[in-house]
Every structure is written in structure tokens, then in C-alpha cells.
Figure 1 (cartoon, one colour):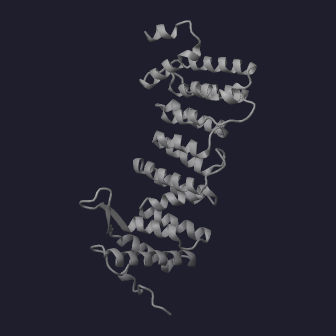
Figure 2 (cartoon, rainbow, N blue to C red):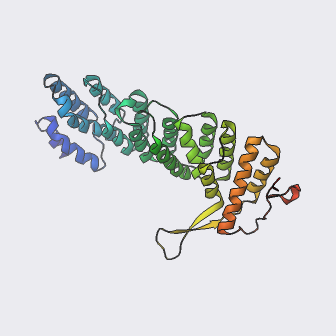
Figure 3 (cartoon, rainbow, N blue to C red):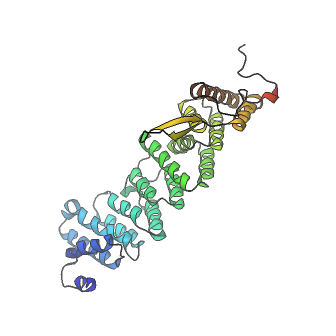
Length: 316
């Protein structure tokens, strides 16, 4: 019946709702139908140039169907047909969003290729949202590339830095091996907002190795102890447990950190002055958290009694 409806001698533009319904039902459509509709729209727009401004949503609606077709890569062909004909650059965020929703590896490859070829068709945040929706390991790598690069959009603003970091944390929780990749990129990204994304990601992970990577990065760049590093320590030193009788509330409990505290204490003795100062500040912050939330069981007050060195440091 669907084939009979599609074969009716009616203008293709009148069949958009039918094709959309097929897609929403989870069925793939032929990529040739949306592509043909795009070509017909472009032919009409060449004669009625007002369509480039007032009827762009129509052709964008056809482009949105291509990620769900039997050939998702045809999305790139359709987008290039449209942007090659437009008299002025225009955003096509809905197409980018559709690639984020479309199933399958081919759609994800098309998303990456489109972002590399034509980053100007969407903002950096729109690209990132489409990537995050896919939730895949390869998508997380794509998000890291987006954070580190400057091609898509005009670069992340402060809000995007925090948002990208939170989304990366969620993806790392699904794919734990990605933490090592974030640490590597943080170490090799010297400056810029991309480094900020990786820095905030490590601070939110609540992981000891991530904390040590942050200390090394701070020391290498001459950064002093700040609120972000303090937050990283809180994430490592305290666990969030649901509060009994309260929906959405949690209680903070100390996490035992004997090995981490011992490592930090060794850093105060055997590392560069910059690293030693950061390690000392981290140890002091852990002590303050212990005073506020209670000591962790089986965690000695001194980070390394066997060292023979005093803690806290004796004021000179």
C-alpha cells in the first residue's frame, strides 16, 4: 500500500508527511526520494529566489529524512547541493540533529564527515549535542576532537566548556577506557578552551589518577591551587549516598584514601616546588574535608608515618 501511495502521480512535495510517517515508524526510505525533492526545490528556487529565504525549512525537512534512509551518507550530498546554491550561508541545525538521532554506524560516519567538511552549517553546541545523543565510544572521541579543535562554530563559550565536560563524564562512565584518552589529551593540549574541557572533565570524574593528572598539568603550566582542583579533591574524597526518606537528596561520606595521601605526601618531599605546593594544598584540603565530614575508617591521620616527616607542616 505504501508503494502504491508513493507511486501516485502527485508532486513529490505532497508526499513528505507520508515519508516522515514511515521514518517515525522505524522504516528506512529510499534516499533517492528526498534527493529528488531537494533537486526539485532547488530548480524552483532558481526561478523564485524568495524561496532561498522564506522556504528554506521545506528543503531542510527533506534533508532531515536522509539520515534515516537506506543511504545515510547521502545526507552529505543533499547538504552540499543546498549550500552550494544558497546565496548566503545558512545554518542547517535540524539536519545535524537528525544525524544525531539516526541509528547505525553509517549515520555517525556521515555526521563526522559533514562536521569536517561543512562546520559552518551549525554552531559548535549543535554539533556537540548531536554527537552526545549517539552515546557511543566513537562519538565520545568525536566530542573530544570537537572540544580540542576550532573548526566547528566559533569555539565553545564558558557554558559550553562546562556542558561538554559533564557530557564527557557521562560518556566515560559508559566507556571507562576513555578516561586514559582524556588524560592524554589534557597533557598534550597546551592552552585554549579545549584544555579547559579536559580539565573540567578530569575534575568531575572523582578518580585518583585523574586528580594526579590535574596536579601534573597545573604544575607544568604554573597554575596555583584553585577552586577547580578543590572540587576535584571533593569528588575523590567524598562519596554521595542517597539520603533515607528524601527523594533526590544525598549524604556525603568520606572515602578512604591512604595510598593517594601517601603519594601526595611523597610529592611534597621529592617533586618540584610547584608540584610540592600543589600536593601540600591537596593534602590540607583533604584534612579539612575530614574535619567537616568525619575521618574515614582505617585511614591514619598522618599521610605516611613511616617517612619520619611531620604533618601538618610545622610553621617556621
